[in-house]
Image 1 (tube, rainbow, N blue to C red):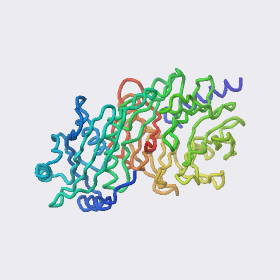
Image 2: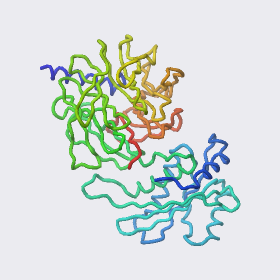
Image 3: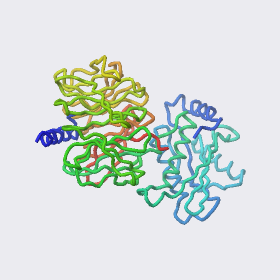
Image 4: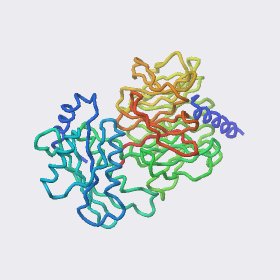
Length: 452
């Protein structure tokens, strides 16, 4: 009976959460960074970059891969927030320096600062791509960088995985690296919940919403998916066995099945991976009151961090692993608190509102959370408690943030279109993009680290 009561309690908490209540770079990279700074005045403007259709240098392109690579990579660069992409140009010649110079001269005259010459070899179930990046602001149209990539069709045992799109994502991330010093986030995944409140399954898609694949098919209520730091597994709470237990699945290794991480009496919820992937912070009510614990995954050893009569939940780690932010109503209403890794030195971070769903930036300098007012909106604050600021202000409710590994993009759920869908935006609240479509509600996104 106690487990049934606890299960009912978690359903309430789950509903409250849904509603918002609760490869090494080339040596010339530095030159490319200089080009970006010189051209855009330190990044205040977007860099115009031309991406013609890829040039096929081996094999026969019967599937339109050359055009797809240019389109996907161009969209990735647009979504990065750094670039304005000039697309739709025909393929460039493979071994004709004069024709290549003429094409880049025309692109520069049209306003392009950089150009990408993509080369494609098709060898059965393997693609070979090469990215050549040119500085069109110099008289000699200097080659900034060149890098080759390979992509092979996935094994039949794996879920659907568009290896052609992944090749484009890798190329786009390399271009971002050349101009900023940090790879882009195109070669990442989003996990999120899809379905009605009574039956939510976890799905995985490319960061831009393409290639959706089911990760669970248990016909139950699955909650709070969160990627591990190695981008191989997802921890989540599920009622698949009738109770709110904590599990782990491997979306790219389905033969490993689902592992049980915690099935204590009562609530097993709000998983949060430590930066080293060895531990999970989570909420357990096995001792009567929802408290925050840390579970050592390899041994199953538990460490209790909070001991308070109020509800403590929704932990999130700092990127150093030395601190944990969490939600507690010990101040009267839910607020954000921070404590040391072992549970000491608890301090209140936010005040004057109803605050839930803290998420610590991978850069370590910002915590994003949900504030309830007339609507639910995303706010940001420094880990020291200064500079609280809104990131959204409607329309509708905006909540449940998750960080991209670059610390510049945030995905979240919003019902601004009348139905819950997943969106992402830049940290300053600009460049909002809708990721999911369709009639089913999409909630609780989790942005993966960069894929291995």
